Length: 394
Ligand SMILES: Nc1ncnc2c1ncn2[C@@H]1O[C@H](COP(=O)(O)OP(=O)(O)O)[C@@H](O)[C@H]1O
Ligand SMILES: [Mg+2]
Image (cartoon, rainbow, N blue to C red; front, side):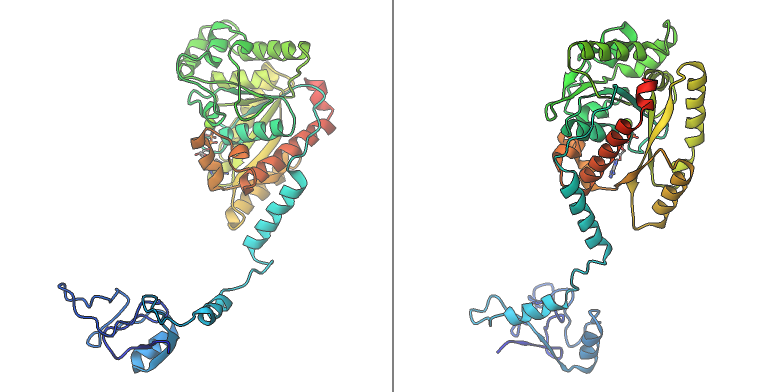
């Protein structure tokens, strides 16, 4: 016979919690009956049973509940399969109309259509500056994951870490302690990029020019140097030529900018043709965007006529909030051509990956974050292959 819940005897168990109904519980030294949990009550102090209406009425009337309680210390424990079946049947079923199930299906579609695919090569090396003067919007995350996704799809990629924090170098597993030859040597001492790039351990085809902490001083040191705005551009052009001449042409150069519009970012704008702006789907996302666009316009009219915003990616998108949808709608209304169809969700796996010196593309390639970056990378590659301005402006 399965034991039943009796709310009139002390001690007893809270309905449905599965605690043993200890018929012989003695009060402990603290005055609590030994088998009693916080959810249980004594007859002198009946439980304000908070576990649903049937429990409420049982507690009030003192009637016997029909909820069976299994004592697993009792060798004569009855087979609980029936009880489990009842509980299992009470759990809501997976309905393909729920947002979670739809997200799972969407990820599966991306995995089936995109994983392991190769992407078309651009007609010329595409130099893309990943910029947004706001911090924490996903510039570094976007740079390393798009670079990794492109490399996994067969492209050759150079990542230039232009942020003294060196987060892109960390995420790509690249050594960047203060003695390592770095972008600082390129900008300040005129070292060739080829002397400082390191291969990324997990991703064949991807090399990275690391940033060390020295780069923090470069912003000031550059001020007094000749051709201070074009130093990166010259180094990139020479390296691209060197790679092309050696028969190992680079498809993409992605420059990860610091969160400012200082000389480092200006160097990045002069070095490339394309600006790639990640926009975080948050309230303040669009503030500062007009300042960024004004600066791009200034660079374009004075230093680099080929510069244009080619790509916008919505990051940390949360489909459950109206705010994300509003930001996305607004961005798409203003930049319909530039904004990628793919959006990147807020994802724990994306934020965990750098602590393992990895991109999410290698850390958890089947996660929704990795699949979204893969989708974005494929879109970037396909647009570049279709768009002949890539060639003209190169
Ligand atoms: N899609 C995402 N989901 C969850 N966390 C993210 C996502 N994108 C970025 N992050 C996290 O947000 C923080 C800021 O991102 P980061 O790429 O460093 O921004 P930025 O380079 O613009 O300063 C990092 O801790 C990063 O791991
Ligand atoms: Mg960054």
